[in-house]
Image (cartoon, rainbow, N blue to C red; front, side):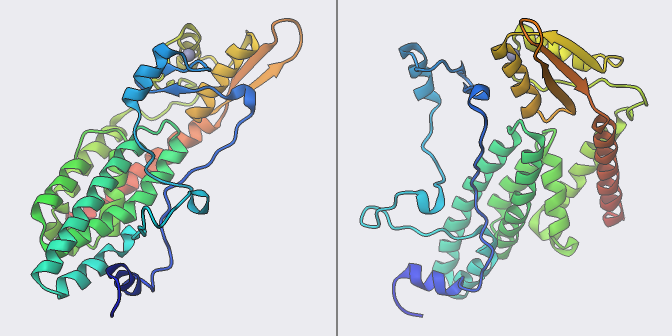
Length: 314
Ligand SMILES: [Zn+2]
């Protein structure tokens, strides 16, 4: 291989065909659009000077562009993207070139872990359950590839960081951890430090399964944290009531929109319809049967994961 280093890397990875792309796009009716920034609260538009300061403090540079829509001036910055799933091949190729190649791979993997770790934290904070599940499953292969590469070069300190991160106490992290274990042959768990992850997961799954199964007729559900306004307190009380299945709620348009937003973001099994009679119109919230099915599916998944782990560990 000849030419610039990036061309040689491109040749090396030429056979890869499935890039992972971190991007998202969403549309919503204008009336439903609200802007709330964690650490600052609901944003009034136009942004006031008082809100601009805290906004600047929580701001970070955008990390991902929008493909061809992203402006790229190669005279200023000329970079390519390496797919994380290619890391084991790239690491192996670097290693073959000797000590310098292994050191280069180590730098690359360190940077890859820094980025993946930030992505994991962002996904764990994602309020939408389906998007969180999808993103965690996308991350599974990437972290597994990273663990394989780190194991290849014997980067024990970085592996330790990955394992410690996967063993943190977090409601949703166990799903990622089990996915990585499933994606990695059990024969290499020990060398990669994943046996510690495998030992950690059963407790998290058992504690999920220890919660009582949903009894028939128990319509209680939890409104995830996010807003503590009077409306949300009232919404939370309706949702938590095991006997209440429907509520008629006369509310002005912006207050109805706030509740739509809260229910839709959390993907709660609750329909919201507006009865357009009288003033203000009435918001009709109705809990749906999906509540029971979602609960059943989650328990079955946790049970299957726990059984699989226990069989693997003999
Ligand atoms: Zn609220």
